[in-house]
Length: 537
Image 1: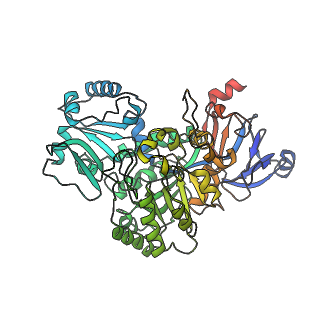
Image 2 (image 1 turned 45 degrees about the vertical axis):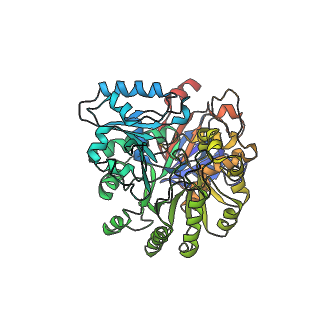
Image 3 (image 1 turned 135 degrees about the vertical axis):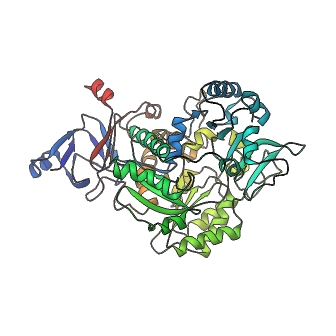
């Protein structure tokens, strides 16, 4: 027995403005669409799912995030909403009071660009807060951390410790570590943190996915498998929650190059899938982030001319990694923020092309040039963008880059006009996972709550259709599953996001007031906003 979904506005996203009156689903698949009365006549035994005037879209999918990391942020001390260094210090003092001695203090999401004094804490200042707990505070970009002296001591980091490949141990004029560690230097401390237990990973993942479905997401493309002790343990958390416990969610798992051998040793292959958990492309990091000035640029930073960023791997190493992926028959998904990192990856992809019929994915693609765009257009590439970065990176990013580099930076509309397929993600926990915030940023190029309502690069604003497409068709095309998901059409997954407002008819400000009514995955209601439903009735 199937279900008929009716009684609201239903956008198919097949093309702009296309709608259907009702949908018939069975066993998690869209079997038919058409007029409600016609479907009722054809399927008289079907269960009726009345949308009650709400608006149904193809299920929203986040094309780039870290599911377990998002859960950790929700369960740890969240510093992302603090807007002064004083507030950060106060929050840490309170956290120390509630934490047994010698246990680690974890903080997530600090961003000095939100502080009037642009303060980056020194280890000695963190020591004043606690010297009896090791402390690690992840910057919002997750490409830098702050640690206190106890954490440095446990990691064996001294003035004699050299920078690891792809990382920087920031030191003062006397050569002493300041506690600020960039990119691969973070790993020196993370290696001495007690390994996550199976229960810890399960609970973090459960917290994360529950939050995702509450916010209208039916799935995510996530990269988690190399950070929590072992491939087997981390993959096991997904298996236990989604398969064993039946919490339906479409988790497309990118496989970090450091565990891709482990994946194959355990008998898995690229694109192995049970319909909910799928192994995706091999993940590579080519550079760092703009906040910590570790994104790899072709010219020095405007506000720090002594550096052009950090290459996580040499050009030769990148070539070898891409070759390794091809030997496994895999596409690649590569973190590339700076234009020089993007150039390195084009070199590697041109040398070792994607397997026939596959698309590689370059993630972020924030700083580009016309020349790079012209080269990239000739390749089977997806550009995986995070619209919300505009709301949080401007205006400080202008200081980093200078005006002359802005034309092809964060240039989402240009990329679409040039014919690129773009997918939309949040990069949570770096940004909020809420897809409506991403859609708002794509359409407005504004930061919510900005009293000046500044529009950054107005000509790069997307239409509402283009913005929603990022999180539906774009995410599907990023994993070559546009024949299964991303639109409302016969034969596609019965994955729906139901909102209380019509995004195509409301003002931009109203996007932020829109609520998720229902999240449907595989034809099953995985989240229902009972409070809003009762108010509407």
